[in-house]
Image (cartoon, rainbow, N blue to C red; front, side):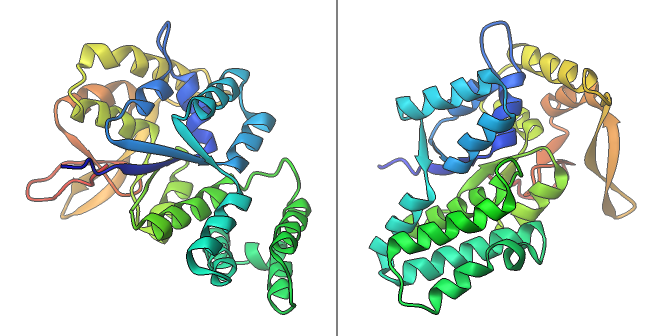
Length: 280
């Protein structure tokens, strides 16, 4: 019986943050890459963003994992080539459609502001290289250090879903708005740093084994410019779920006590009877 792989996309913030959270000799990102039956991908834009904003450790970690084949790197050139190989000239339209949806996830006018020139490309008799050149010109207008990696992660997500008929998951930013955008637009599970700890519990890792990572997570939150002492989780009260702040230091014990499950957007939610958990 063949193993059904789960296709998983890593975004910039997740790689950066999961390299900050660590024990004495191992980073949380390494634990994630050992999740069984997962196949990991990232977009070239993520590599560029880590060069601009990431730590040296996270850049080195990502490059090593790409070289070893543990993470498959996709560029726009490769995405477009595989789409064209699959459906011919329609591949360009598919890429533009994926890009538009990703832009709309950020803001409704993002595509029209930066990528309108792609529409002009479709009105002319152009070649593959011209499409890439036009795309590069559009992105140059955004600015080199202005982050839009989440859009490219979305494009990759849609491409993998289309080419391989799979429903990927995405390990992404702890920014609730970004995760909600992914889950609402693509209807795929988002995995946050907190839901990684839930996954480790599902995989049978002991509380004692996971605690050093969680202690590092707490320290990271407390040592920020604006220290974070609570996280928001969804609590069921008076017949509905409401997002409430709870102390960070309590979360891991509550996870291991079976109090939480993961939502599609990566938030934690108080578990209720007869509700199927989000699969990730």
